[in-house]
Length: 271
Image (cartoon, rainbow, N blue to C red; front, side, top):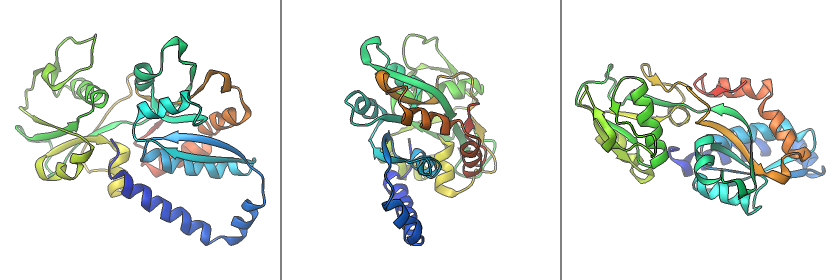
């Protein structure tokens, strides 16, 4: 669900490299210091930015976060199981329930730290979004189910009683605004502004793309812990010093302030 993953990753990498080059004394100091490495896996996008801030916060205590990027949450969870990484960051509780929750998985979810809401907004600067508009929604099953529930909670659509499975576009029973839903996959991102009049995207994606929020929008509300980000570790590793250090940093006021300012208050840090 993250927009222009490779471009954002490339830009952020350049910024980080530039920052290191401009501070040779600190770079030399870092090279001469022994660190305890913590390998943290993420999916591309917002989590990369936040982990680099976390690296600043843990660095003085002798820890170094080594970031490994995986294509999707399922591969990220598998990496924890295989001991390729120490921690998976950015997995939601719903993703963990789907791919990692069996009792014999050997995994342990640490406390949630953040809620990343979706955002419904107009691509044509028309608000409210006119009837018969084409609205882009995510194509992967978990995100689509979540977005449809979001639209239902905002009284934009009605859905069939579908408690036993994920919602799809076929489960829409009432569509009073006659919206035409365009279900996109990652490869279609460039087409959204061409084919759609409005879109539902992660708020962090919008901010990282245009550095602001639209003037008018509807933000997904946090109604439960189902879509909160969690830190996922192996059961036997949950009490390790470096894991507990990461957990405490996620709960720190300094990180909460950074996230609030960086993402214009759209991301909710869980107390």
